[in-house]
Length: 294
Ligand SMILES: CC(C)(COP(=O)(O)OP(=O)(O)OC[C@H]1O[C@@H](n2cnc3c(N)ncnc32)[C@H](O)[C@@H]1OP(=O)(O)O)[C@@H](O)C(=O)NCCC(=O)NCCS
Image 1 (cartoon, rainbow, N blue to C red):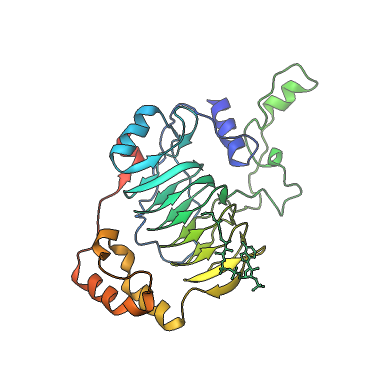
Image 2 (tube, rainbow, N blue to C red):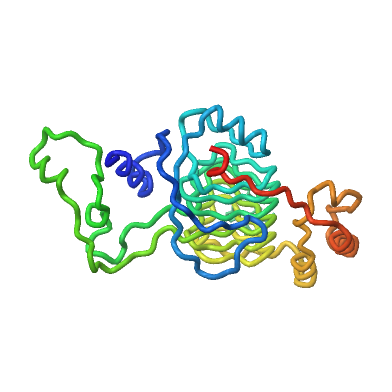
């Protein structure tokens, strides 16, 4: 039990890559639907339950329910509180803490920790969302002073090994530091190759995060951000069109429900788009909760 918790913590602080492990008792987490995204307020730290090993059987179940993963069997895990709105894909994504992902969204690869993703989101390769922080304001950033677990998976044939294995830092009354604030990616966001997104950041609907961008602040809807730290290079559309697109909530519809509208010319199609949304029942496929299917 101790080794398992230690490895989990080591993975959390980035000292170990995720490994397949047996399922642990799930911790109940607040239920959040990926669509619509929650309001823009600082959410409390989220703890993931699970995790569950992604076995061939689990992959097959997810696949049948409209959730695609390309992870090889028995290598990675998923948090038990993962929520999927089909169809969607997590391809080779390495998910450490809770994820919820909306319909028609996919991520190729990288590290994801406590992320809520809306619909029609495209995430490139090796993207980092929600990498944890260490204790920046304390004497030391080293986890040896705040994790009450064995930090290193080592034996007992070195000097002071017994003291090392017995040691548990007493953090009673210690100044807190916040970890794992949820990242919210709204709808129709495109995140480029190797982007890094800080915990707690919200990326607005329609935004683009350029390749290798380091996103430290919220990104407004339909902004294109690039660089380190990310800056707004431009907006995809003018203010009036952005306002109408956001008000339309067009992403509540499935692609086939938008057929016949020229989506390559949004300024010319906005009237039709608004009309279509008004007269069409939203696409509501229901949610796939990992904890319910394992
Ligand atoms: C962000 C992106 C979409 C911008 O496209 P664009 O709006 O056509 O950008 P432009 O080429 O007109 O450049 C606009 C400005 O941003 C800069 N810029 C563009 N992309 C940048 C990037 N990734 N990092 C840093 N600066 C970038 C340009 O140098 C230019 O700066 P300037 O105005 O000072 O000259 C594109 O550059 C990008 O990063 N695409 C991601 C591709 C990718 O990762 N694909 C993987 C598949 S998911």
